[in-house]
Length: 128
Image 1 (tube, rainbow, N blue to C red):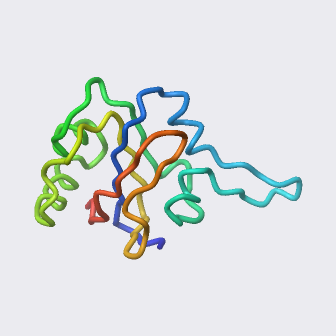
Image 2: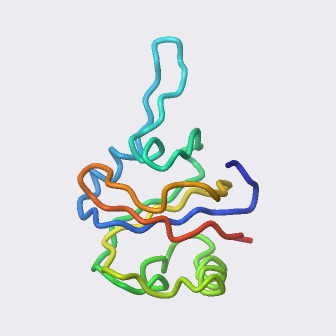
């Protein structure tokens, strides 16, 4: 799961920034224990540091992975590695993207509905 130097990339249909933030917001018990956000629960991610993630609603929907990831940290490297895995286009336009750094998923569900939006795990690739 946790793996330094890898990033896991999802695209989804969410169009509202406040909903995007809500599905990524962790909770805490009265003892201070971390409660996974809905997105992490859906994909079996477990703990992730909020400082090592990026999430954005895109300015316009796109079926191009390159366009969807443009402007994210390490975008050129991530796009190149995803393309090497055959991920260049999406079956349906994406309206948002989530990147979790230092997370390598190999046995995660590939799709899930979270907060009323469909999400697809595009892949986990090196970002450096």
